[in-house]
Structures are given as C-alpha cells and as structure tokens.
Length: 259
Image (cartoon, rainbow, N blue to C red; front, side, top):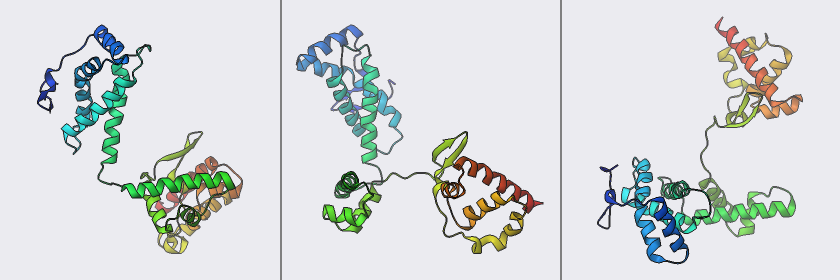
C-alpha cells in the first residue's frame, strides 16, 4: 500500500496518520457538537481508507485522482452521519458508503450515457404511469402517458428504453423445485416457425415417437413460438411440469436424430 499513493493538492496520502479508537471517539463527539476542526481532522486521518477502497477500482479508465475526490465525498457523508452510540466501527459504516459513492460515479459516467433530458422524460413517464394505474387500475397505453406529460410518444419510448438496464437471456426469473425458469423461456419466437426449419432437421419424424402431451408441448413451444408459461396455462399444468416434459421430449428427439 505504501507504494500506491495519490497526490491530492500536494498531499502524499501514503504518509497520512492513523487514529486510535479512543482518539476517533473523542473527535466524533467534538464534531457532533459542531467542532469544525475535529471534523476536518477526522476527514484528514481517514483519507487512507478512501485510498484503500479506490484501489479496487484502479482498473477502470477513470482518473485515479477523480475517484479519490468522489471517495472523499462518501467519507464526508459517512463522518457526518455516523452514530457513535451504535456498537459499530466507523470503518464498517464508512466502507459501503464510500464504495457506493464511487460506484454511482462510475455508473453515471459510463461509456453509455443517458442525457439529463432523456432521464427527466423517463422519470416523468414512470411516475405518470404509476399514478394512472392507481387511478384506473389498468395499464395505460404509451400514447396516454405521452399525452399526459405533453411529450411526443416517440420521445417517451426512446427515454424509457434509455434508462433500462440490459439483462441476460439466461437470467433466472423463477425457480420451482429445482427447475429454473430463465428469461429466454419467457420470450416468444415468431421467426423460427415450423416452415423455416422442420424440413431440414427431420423433426416431424422425431416427434412421432413422443407421448401425446410431450408432442403437444413441442408443437406449442417450437412450432408456434409459445412461452413455457403460455403452454402451462393452456394445458392446465405448472411451468415446472412443462419444463420437465420439454426436456424429456428434446432428449428423446435428440436420441432419435443421432441414431
């Protein structure tokens, strides 16, 4: 750690002093009573903690001095909000607060940036949608939301998409008895229908060996492009059962095709 340092306004942080527990306690008591010098000393003597945290983010493209400044903001917030009456070490309280401040900075300054105006439109749309649902107990159309906030519908759509976080198709959304439902299982496939691929893979012959229920599930899932939840609802069984029957059917078909 001594070889890793930041020069902040001419200050070599590798030579910062360390406070003992009783010294910290006394300074916190003074700072809580409005002693500015005690507060400044707490900040100064805990800069090493900031340095140790931003070291974990050193692989990022952001300037290390910028990260140090952001970390110091988190440190100041931690000092101003720390409750000395609780049986908690200051470092235990401060670390997540400093880390959170740095993460927010990195998130807001990522390569994919959303303009403030787009964020404002998105937040207005989200608030308006929730308000309209409470008032009418129904999901409002995007055009209704756009009209309510006085913005063109295309701008609302773009703004809502801009603030959405990307997700993986393999993100789990439900688990029942060990059979996990993934996001991709909830997406209908309207392109890869029967006429596009059944002839090339000889699947029609493979499905003949299946029991009627498994055959129906395969038809609905891969020929009609239905989701597991849609299939389960129509057949009157659980999604977990659909998942198990689908796996068994695909295994049988695979054995048929490779035999």
